[in-house]
Length: 106
Image 1: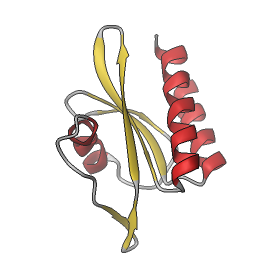
Image 2 (image 1 turned 90 degrees about the vertical axis):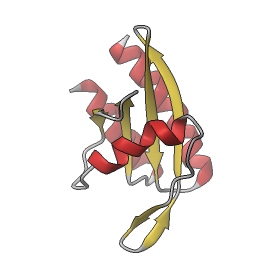
Image 3 (image 1 turned 30 degrees about the vertical axis):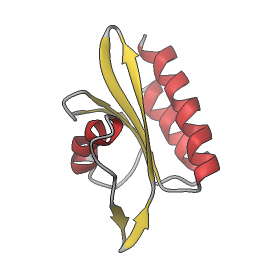
Image 4 (image 1 turned 120 degrees about the horizontal axis):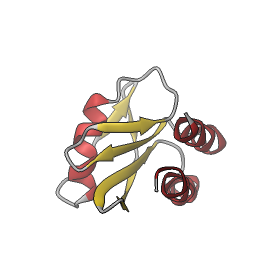
């Protein structure tokens, strides 16, 4: 799937744990290849994206940062999230992944 490949490349390029796209209800639409269970992360992504919560994510006991961007596709609200890595790379890949999702899914 093209979107999975785009997200996986973004995650690898920036050393991110994961890139994922979820719908407004918190259901996973697409994500980068990972062995992680993304269901819980997907569930909280819209809440974080709406500014209703601050993410407190840990992986192997270490805190991980999360950035979320809202994205409108076909008149519906989605949220794109990136987890891990450094702020500069996370911001860059968040923007690149929003653009990729818009191109692929629009």
